Length: 207
Image (cartoon, rainbow, N blue to C red; front, top):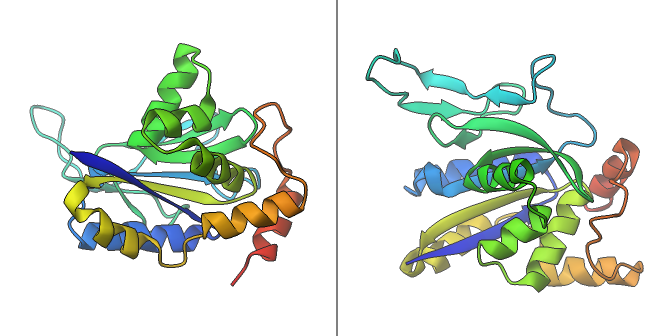
């Protein structure tokens, strides 16, 4: 039985390092996903395109053969990602533009295409994340953060949780900070943060 482990990171670089650590820890990259705020357009895909193929590490012809591996291109960094998957730029209600890769991004994109409601909050709760944590996770992405979500066997969850907690946000602590500033819950109808607001939020929590 698979269980879901989620962590929020204020810096994309921290999320990138964690995904590489997951790969080293033999977590199948098909079970790893990343969603990162892109309100400041730190990631730009090719002109006129909102779906960006990953940089292939070992690409073979399509005649019955397959792509062995893939990694998010140099514009994003050295983060490993699911073989033959795509980096997708999505507009998420209440969050704004995000860069996504992996299974959660695919789920989120499918919800958008299918007209389903719920956005990122719905995708997380549908995946089994309790709503209280999901609210803070989505608000964290809205404010400039990066979310890494991993599916692992239940027996491996403690080990993976410890690994992913490196430089991860303490959700209880972050929830208290948000609430002291008047935040009650994620609002899908709220305007997305501007690039300046995202930069300020990231600076506020910089280590």
